[in-house]
Image (cartoon, rainbow, N blue to C red; front, side, top):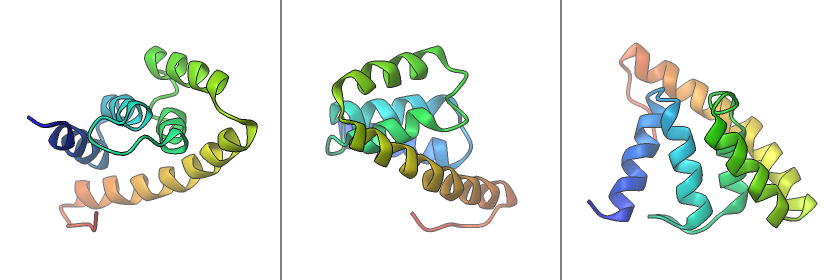
Amino acid sequence: MSDVQYFRQHKSFVEAGDSLSTYTVGLCYCDGIGVAKDPIEAYAYWSLRETRDQEDARWARYLLEKEISPETKRLGELRARVLQQELDAKVAAYRAGRKFAH
């Protein structure tokens, strides 16, 4: 499996409601695995309510906070709010058996 396939697979798992994959998608964004590096997206995924109880995600976000600017952190927090709403809608659609746009 290529890095791009790995990223896409885990992102689809998140969109289907798999909370464990939220950490993995954040890691992909942080390290550029199958997707361009994006600390804002990494921070956002590690800030989702699904990952708040995951020790790995909390630790990763803590380490990332040491490397990013306050502005990047602020943007990550804002993105997390929007991302949570997007994912809530996609998970609800998935559970209802409807298709949703990627």
